[in-house]
Length: 118
Image (cartoon, rainbow, N blue to C red):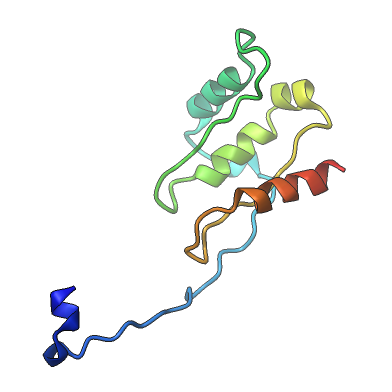
């Protein structure tokens, strides 16, 4: 703060918009184009369908740097035959991105899911 207040540095704040907005994702995936995710996919499916979990809907976050295949992994799980059979018409794909560098707005996300469900 002292450095910023010092006029000799003439510091100014520049707010920049994202250079490129990320495209919205969809649930479709060409499984033949994804390599090396079978173990991760099966672990996640097993976790989501674990019969010892009662009552609450299981939630699993997939986090990491861009380009690691988080979306592809989520698509593989979403389209897995066991997930389709268990959740049938209760599966919803919602694209959630923090592209504008704001905090995730849970109300907006839940509103998207509610709109899809109704």
